[in-house]
Every structure is written in C-alpha cells, then in structure tokens.
Length: 199
Image (tube, one colour):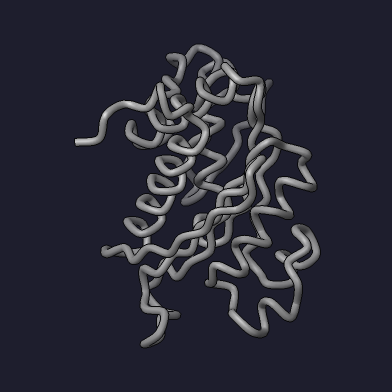
C-alpha cells in the first residue's frame, strides 16, 4: 500500500501515476513568451555557427539560464550557468578580482566584465553574458538607484558592457534584465546581414 505524502498545509501531493499522466508541459509557457522567443532566436543563431554560450548571473538568480533551458535542444549550444549572488562567489567561481569589487562594487561594468570573461573561460564557450544589479525594493543609493543593472557580453572580439536603469518592482526589474541581456546578445551573435530591420 502506497503511503500518502503530505505537503505544505497538510495537503496530499499527487501520486507519481497522476504526474505521469499529466498533460505534457509546453516549454513556451515555462517562461514569459518574449523571453522564450529571444532565447530560441539566440539558440538558432549560435547553433547555425556551431558556437556556445555560458551565463553569469547575480540579480537574476538564474533566470537567464532558465529562459535558455526552456528551449528544447539548448544543450547543443548552452554549456553552463553560474549564479554568483555573493561577492565571494563572484571571486571564487568567476575570478572577479577582490580589488575590482572594492573599487567599483558588485553592480558595476568593471565587475560584470570580469564575470563575463570568467564565465567564458571557465565554461570554454564562444560567448558569455553577465548581469549584476539592484532589483530592489531596497539596496539602492543616490548613485546606483533601485533598477540599476550592469551587463557584459564576452565573445571572440572582446567584452562589451552597458548599464541600464529599469522601472518597476523586483520581479519587473529581473524580467526586464533577462529581456535586455538576451536581446543585446542576439544582436551580437547574429551576422549583420541577417539582422531584422529596426523599427
């Protein structure tokens, strides 16, 4: 006789048989459709060129990697995702220099440049994208208000960095960060002749 499993608030969890019979989950609904679409387009561009990608995330906590891995077949071009939330993790896992953090802070283009370069080197990929920001609702300063996010993309031609300021609550800032990280990456990995017109 199978024992009943009890979940939060003493609610019984579904049996394995029920889970097996459940309708197949559609990957398009695993993340917001826009993020899925961007990740799929990045994957097609990388796959066509035989290139690979790694991610290094702080404020998004793995959401970029989640968008990427919601795309079936992403293992062909996505190698690894590093979630380096604490400064010591950025140093230990990605090789961010302590002096960089001391001089510029975790939310800085100097730091995300080193995060992206470290992720690319450690995962041995063609490309890497890194993000670090202040998603809120606390943690902002006059110099770096809530919604400030720094980005870096490392590739064969070097590292590009940028800073954006997003509005909205914590969830909105994180989603916008993923969107912008993937949209900019798509521009970098898509040959200029194949890019859709803007506007």
